[in-house]
Length: 166
Image (cartoon, rainbow, N blue to C red; front, side):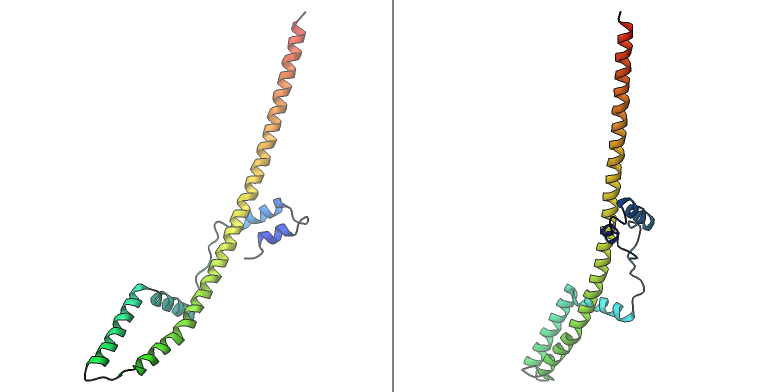
């Protein structure tokens, strides 16, 4: 965002609401798309890891694998990781050690995207508010002109009636 419209209004009286509205009209905030392209490999991987590990499919698959791991090692004669499942503990710790920061990176990126969308929404709302205020001013002016014209017509009719009466 080049310059926030809120900052423009905060500079009052240097910049009026009309100038801020002109600025918002030029930028067309409602048509501006929040750019999501240009993601690095790390950002794409972080999003993919967050999407996969945050799904029911992952939870179910991981639960089945853990159940099978424990069942095979506890009840078969060929245990490669006997109770207390030290290798399983190591693998789960390894998974948690890498998954947590990667998921946090994806959340930080999503927070940046959400912040940009919120700024865009604010600009759109500010523009709408200023446009509505301008429309109210125009309608008030039209109403005043209409009342003035009607008053003039009434005065003309009164004057005409006075001239017609003897």
